[in-house]
Amino acid sequence: GHFGPYGGRFVSETLSFALDELEKTYLSLRDDPEFQAEFDYDLAHYVGRPSPLYHAKRWSESLGGAQIWLKREDLNHTGAHKVNNTIGQALLAKKTGKPRIIAETGAGQHGVASATVAARLGLECDVYMGAADVERQKLNVYRMHLLGARVIPVESGTRTLKDAMNEALRDWVTNVDNTFYIIGTVAGPHPYPLLVRDFNAVVGREARRQSLEQIGRLPDALIACVGGGSNALGLFYPFVEDDGVAMYGVEAGGDGVETGRHAAPLASNAPRGVLHGNRTYLMSDEAGQVSDTHSISAGLDYPGVGPEHALWKDVGRVEYVAANDKEVLEAFRELTHMEGIMPALETAHALAHAKVLAPTMRTDQHIVVNLSGRGDKDIMTVAKLDGIE
Ligand SMILES: Cc1ncc(COP(=O)(O)O)c(/C=N/[C@H](C(=O)O)[C@@H](O)C(C)C)c1O
Image 1 (cartoon, rainbow, N blue to C red):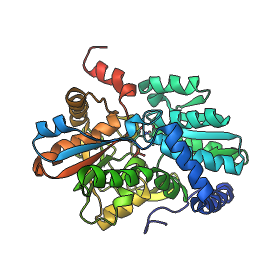
Image 2 (cartoon, rainbow, N blue to C red):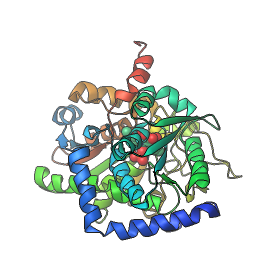
Image 3 (cartoon, rainbow, N blue to C red):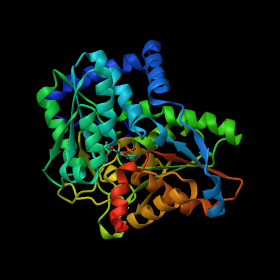
């Protein structure tokens, strides 16, 4: 693997050439000043970076402990961190001269971010999305259509993210000559977990500089939700050598890890397995059959996790916890009422852990939470639960 015993490239032979080509292209461009300049230009002038590091003063005071700072990825163009990665991968697609991109999506944010860069670069775009997620993230489905992308509902399996990624990989095997697969998280065969982490690391580099400017020192703790794990790695990676900075990855506890109805492979110490081309922690049975997952949030509803997180769990650099659906809804409502900021349900998992951690810390300590996305897409879900639709 590329992350200790994790990662690797467990895919069919037909993809090996494309993955070799992608790795060579990426590794040469990663150190190319022109490529980096184009990437930085698009992040500044199209995405709107840098995103603010906002002191949630009223919320922090209400919790009575550490100061909570929100890294506002919800303010990016398209409303989440996903666009950092799709801008980078679209530049790679342009370099390889492929006229079509495909993507998988669950929450729809990655699908929208892919359709957005496809529109901007004049590329054809097909997005695979579990039929269950098409239902619960309708706003984003309409956005993808309006952006000119085709949304392909996936009826197989649990009709969620895992199944969408299976179909996307199948499409890529068939159409690898004219198609670039923009993977939306730090999963998939090498080099995807590496390049998706690198494209997202702009978040952590900004947050580190902003902490020194606005707080006057590094933060005491970082918190981010973990679906495949890209927003968490993007925030954490630039801090990994800073031993004084604790890191918490928050997975989907669903109905409670003890019930089995969750999507928390790390927090539940799931067995190791191979999914979507990489070896990692995988919610699966003794025969290696992938387990069904449950989460109120489509974006975290995934039985696997990025291989770099698997390694960081084993070496103890990051503590992985789970937040249950109930705690997530409370955190969604609390931030909306206390700060006038409506977070995505995925993001609310990180906020739920901030509610647990902050009161255990002193008021002169600081936590940075990755506000990975905005909650517009989830309003109907919450309204239904409130019986006010
Ligand atoms: C606002 C928001 N916050 C967190 C996540 C979790 O994805 P990671 O950051 O890759 O763990 C997501 C994941 N969304 C993806 C999507 O929009 O398609 C996800 O469902 C898949 C790409 C994995 C998200 O939309």
